[in-house]
Image (cartoon, rainbow, N blue to C red; front, side, top):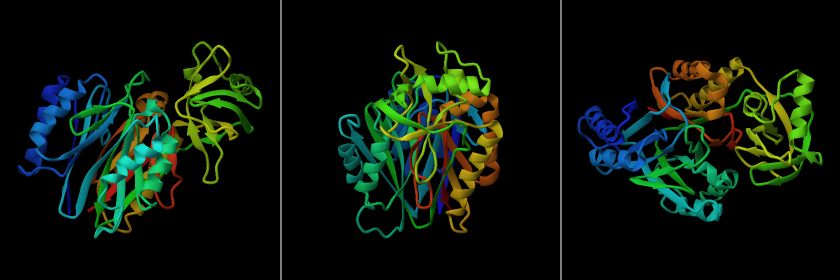
Length: 388
């Protein structure tokens, strides 16, 4: 049996917010310390003050989370808030893993995370998963997911995303207990006697011919088919009758992102800006030599994607009822949809009811589960559901 408590805290004073969250958790659990607390906090907060205040109230609970770019508790969403999930169970075990210097060595960071996991060897609990939050601006998120899979012998489902900073793309953080870390990854190991469902879907379709990535430097896409990358978008805008201002490209980019062709489908990348040499800065790296296409979507497609991800997660429970969920989607999705993003959250709430969920908008989403298209994504709905 798993017990949960969720909230969306809008108190602007970080010390007060942490104290109130901790007190509310203790009251919800009749004074019993939770096993784990997950929280996502806007960059408007003093993270250290928030975490220290929360830890004083929550005792020995494992605390993990990250900075975010939009927070939600069920269909209630906001910016500048803190979304929180507290968990207590006699059938689920929780442990925290931390990996540092992701930029220097994703493989070493992944091994550091896995070192503290209890289920990498034999475990009495057959279902193994981990919430993974990484400093998105450190890069190498794709490699990190691959290395985590190797470090855990392919026995874990992963879900989560890249920390945000309210859309500024300046500095992102992950939380491990009362520590606030950059260039790091934090994971919450979940070992359960009942299934853990993970679903992923994006709702975008190809809208252009394929382009070969002929030059790339990390998250800077230099050329497609041997020409400056921006030329593909200029041509696409002209062909589809869309306005494209190179000096202010984000409004166009939010509706025209890139899809990387792969055996499981398209993995998405969000273009963010155009450089003087015609190269394009993206929210995540694109592999050299990959074939990419410019993608299109609609508001209804985004809602359907959230529904598909939620249904897939629930179906993976094998007939068990949902107890609580975690939902992630891209900050670019929220910016593109505006108020219509609430329709996506309402769709998740309807399918999970009466179970609650929390989550946040991230800089990229992590998903790796059996039967799902795995890796590091942009503009993709990722849903994890724990069973009763």
